[in-house]
Length: 264
Ligand SMILES: *[C@@H]1O[C@H](CO)[C@@H](O)[C@H](O)[C@H]1NC(C)=O
Image (cartoon, rainbow, N blue to C red; front, side, top):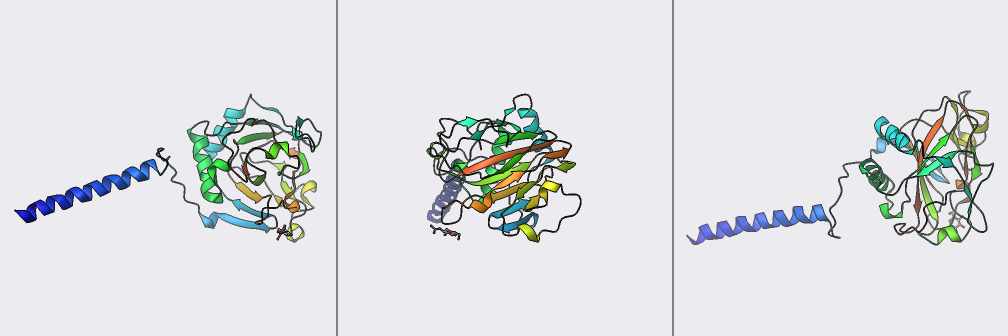
């Protein structure tokens, strides 16, 4: 009789432990329900492009459907892209940047949420440090001349610190032009290039936009200082159009943004 009770107690205990475990896994330490993030980063799809700046390309990071979803949400809401004034940090128009863009809110919908979590998983950088995903559209002839993603003004660093890394997701294929080029990358002049690259992409390490691919590069060194070699440009689109989505990642949490309008 005693051993039967012991057994029941043991089973109850097991059940209780199991319940506690599944409960704490689902709700996490913070008590918030953990979101589904079934993404497992696949290293065989990632290529290291450069070590200074640190830059990596993930083939097929987004599905075609996800790319189309982001484009269709942003279409019709695009506004001419601005740059941050070097002194005041104010958003100003500049001929160096002729694309148009649109900022999503963080966690705007389930698809965006999934992508944000996937980025955190791949980059090992906290999800809370990310800005809202920014969609960019470049029509024929549109470009963004060589620039850093980190801010040089103080104002834009007040919230979350500076931008330390960027994940640039290509949402469309571009028939010609539209490459992302790092003119001062260490590997700049070792990359073989054929005639499929545009003239603009000749000098520097160039990445061709390909629908679904994601480029990750770091604007900061590991010792938390800005890396000027991370400057890059978006070559003019020669044939077709270019859609891209950017996730800028800050040094610290970017949850309490007062203004999400500043872009660079
Ligand atoms: C940070 O690291 C970079 C790259 O290794 C180096 O060039 C730079 O001098 C370092 N800066 C400081 C303040 O340690």
